[in-house]
Length: 358
Image 1 (cartoon, one colour):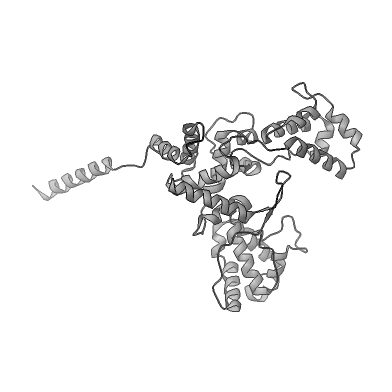
Image 2: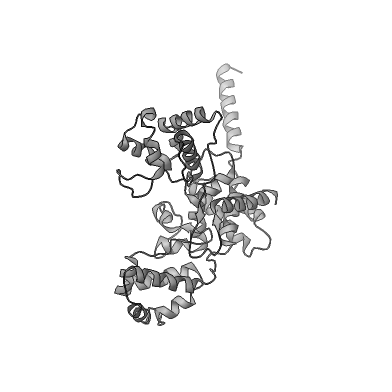
């Protein structure tokens, strides 16, 4: 055989081998893999598995056991495999919120009562509908109706629906609305309403949980981020380094910038960093621009991040952690006992480990 023919034959053989190489699991194999990790007591396991598989595929996420179990752990913690979970006492919570807002805006109780006695789009009064709501989807629909049709409703809520989380993974509705590009289903009415469906709640919950890179070694910090915001665990560790470097006591909540703070009245982390201006060389405006990068992975590579850890570790005489669970107390009208981000993250991690072993 000539060298030319040998090369041609070899190339054909390699191409043939490539064509027969496996290209990853099929959708049905992924669905079966997910269903096997869902507890046997869950109804419609195949339906849940299908919606998770579609979300993974649409977002280009690897359907490995770690990602599957991370998703199912958050799902179990937040919604217990219910697309629109019941919130005990929600009607009373909603009425109390209406009264609180009315008082804050100096609206008389009689005016509020009169507005709630009006008939809504389904024929019932707003007061009756609010008293009977059991889920956040139901309450969101009442608020949409109230804000859209009753002038006092628009005044109470400033044209803003106060239901800001929902669905089986209790994902943030503003997050979903900001990440709607690529949503693989027809949108029925609005992204807000999609969040309260099984398919939509899973898609946006999975995007919030998994569709970003982190520097973390342990999954518990990704779970903490799900509750406190992306990179909150990395940023809490950075705040800890700032506290060590400056000798100031700081809230390690993962918020390195106080939202809406003017440049002349910075939040406590930003104010502490100004004490180190001779070390990091940034004026107030440049410092704020640097801290604005704390919602990205590459903040780890910034000169500010590196310099703060250099100073802090020199002062402490030991390495400092690069991730910490934020010290946040969870606050919501739905929460009736003291809970924290640490409680949430450790509970989810326990479910994650049980899923891996299932």
